[in-house]
Amino acid sequence: MDIKLPVNWTPREYQQAFLMDMAGIKGRPETAKKKALLVWSRQMGKDSSCGIFMFIEAIKIAGNYFYCFPYSTDARKAFWEKIEETTGKRFLDQIPKELIKRRSDQEMVIELVNGSIIRALGFDSDPEQARGLSPRGVVFSEAAQMDPRVFSNMEPAISMNNAWVIYNSTPFGDNHFHQFYKHALSNPDWHCSLVQTLWPDQPGYYYTKDTKYFKDQIDSGIMTEEQVEREFGCSWDAKISGSIYGDNITLAYEQGRVGNYPYDPNYTVNTYWDIGDVDKTVIWFGQVIRGKTYFIDYFDCTSPNPSDLAMMLANKGYHYGTHVLPWDARYTRMSVSVEMQLSEAFFNFGVGGSMVCTDKAGVQVGIQAVRKKFSSYYFNANTCTDALELLNQYRKKWDERAKKFLDEPIHNHPSSHTADALRIEAISEGLIGDSTFGTIKPYKVITDDGD
Image 1 (spheres, rainbow, N blue to C red):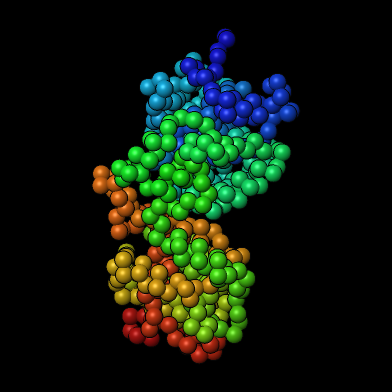
Image 2 (cartoon, one colour; image 1 turned 180 degrees about the vertical axis):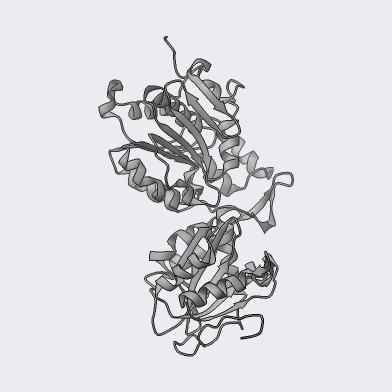
């Protein structure tokens, strides 16, 4: 059976260069590159190119192949249900039907006749889902907006299997994806390319539309100038549109407030929580020293139980002052409150410190409190860099109909829990005692009879 792939697709020169580099010199597998990084403008075929390469590899070599996005909704919309603009047909129709043994639209899984499995995934708020996967090849699409722990969690399996891996995205500020790009650019083992469609006089330019088109996008309010520069010009310097704390974080780096700020045993450690039920629980660890808050540590995980959290806190070895929980932790779930569950677990593991819940406060009140206090925040780069990247992605909702940002932030974004926990710190003034070690009363379990 003679089958040609891809079906009804003619690659542009930069797409052809990518496919040839990954296939090897004259198709020799031993010369093929195992890693690629694509910084391609919007509408330049990032996912088409990566998906076609994955299809070809999956047909050639049986194995597990994963096409990954930051969110499950993106995996479905941008890959599984994608309609090609040039043909008007579904992207997945690039795979000839005679090669498909089974296809599940609900699971977003295709099984090929040779035994290969192609699966589209979204990691949403849980980077731990990447553990345990065993890929023969993997694509991280929109990698700039993905939690970088997804990559580190999957890296051991990628290395063990000698798998190929592709990162594609438009820029999203000076974050982990920019660091990947700078590394790949100077590494001959990587295929690295930047294709932008905005500036004819700058590197990587590929003509698709006249400059008037982009000006009209801005003048009409369809896109902001920053969005055009980032999405079409592939600018690393363009601000993240709608970012709530982006300017605060940039200033913190410029002023040296992100650096070597480890635990100081002369002061107690306060913890600030956002508690998830089925989603993430986030904890910031801060020390108040001479009117400044030093965030020495950060923790998050999905659906932890109180005993696991207490053990983690105890193993840190910190002298705790006050554990500040959100207001709803005091309300009962299944006949007992989260506060009481944590109280018992803390006592059993000897965590120490006292526990309080904040009063209920609106999201905007908390955001303004954080912005007001941000100039007094210091972050330990060794433990809080990933958290700062998430915080940098915390942004306002975009109203597509009105073509403007709303005041309210995006909810259930991986960054929202990180931001929620930081708001707990900002509204906790008056709940924290003297942070000098030795002045905090030992932790005590609160029971129904007051003992």
